Amino acid sequence: MIIGFSESINSILLFISFVSIFYSMVFPVINTAFSIKKRYSEMFGYFTSAQSAGWALAGFLAGILSKYGNSGIKIIYLISGMIWILSVIIFYIFYPEEAEIEREKQVEKIIIKKEYIFFLSGIFILEGGITLGYGLLSIRLYEILDKSKFLYGLIWATFPATLSVLAGPLWGKIVGKYGGIKILLFLSVIYPLNIIALNFSTRIITSILWVLPL
Image (cartoon, rainbow, N blue to C red; front, side, top):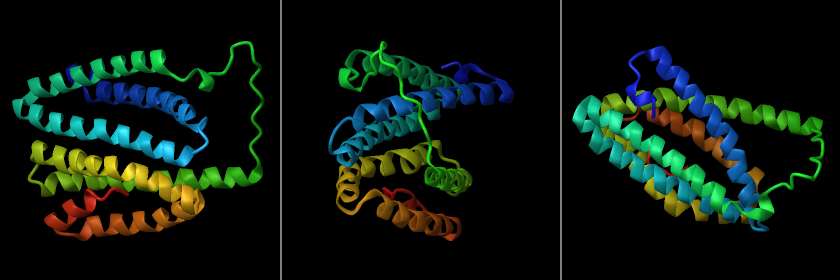
């Protein structure tokens, strides 16, 4: 909420880092609520669908409000902050009791096996590559769309998120059927190819590849 009213780049980066830290704390809590279910992969697919639905609406709304210049951008961040507060209240009220750890219960010490260290290192490298690649490609997408904030909101968020709403449950069933490691390896091959294609494709091809629900 404060980001929209900040004039300094340093302060904007500082507030964004706070948001990222808060999200990193919230995401495991939300993830835990779905992990208590037996059909975890399918439930997590529905979680990604709900997440994508919000992403789709937000991208469309941001694209429209961005037409009103700085005032529109401030309204976007103001709405975003209010929604974030509302979501925290909803999580607090409806969070599954069975997912909550009893306060009197002692939390067991977590011991990370050696094989998990290598696995986590692989995730770290993979996520770093994806974030770096798509971060730069986001700028390229904005430029090839003639810096139209409305089109950028549609292509970057609304269209891919809408497809992800439909694809989320499907991916959950696929993971449940074939196993997480096989799908992880499959997507680990697809993502680099997609990044390369996005970098060298034309405007239309780039837009099509960007909206794929991978």
